[in-house]
Image (cartoon, rainbow, N blue to C red):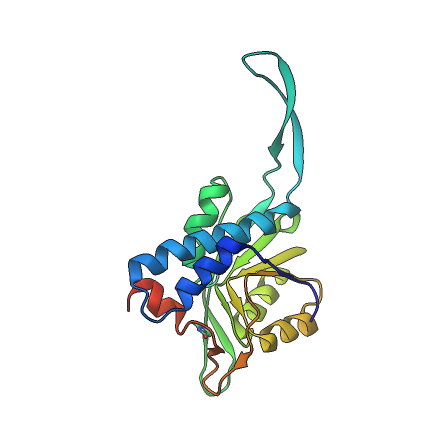
Length: 207
Ligand code: URA
């Protein structure tokens, strides 16, 4: 497996354990999703450039820094929405692109029912938000659509990943980086991540 940044942080491990626990209620699940997401965004945003900026402190002039506003978030519907609010709290000016894909159960071909991307995507660092990278199908489709629109720098922020999904992304999009807090063991025959945390969207949205 290549291009994977496994984030090994005690706070992430603590919150991830709460997310994995089947007895965690929706409110607590949402709170810890926000914590883990922010730890991942913190790591992924290390790729952001800084501009130098002169400011006046109460004592003297000094040189500081300002983030160069170069990111775009693309949450994969529906679970990716959960990572958007914590991501936006860190980088509140960041534009958000949406793509709605629906897979035909028989052909496995993705049908696009919605697409809206910000302009100048070719000059931006696009961060795809998807908490569970399982077989990688929807993320791979999302990356392909983004590349068709001209995106050149793409990364993915995931809370839990499966080796199967990482390997597929490595093969089909070897230029894409993956930031995650867990690489789990495998996918089961229903394509759930093992040990995983169950259906993320159902647990986050309380459905
Ligand atoms: N999506 C989920 O919500 N959970 C999994 O285990 C895999 C994909």
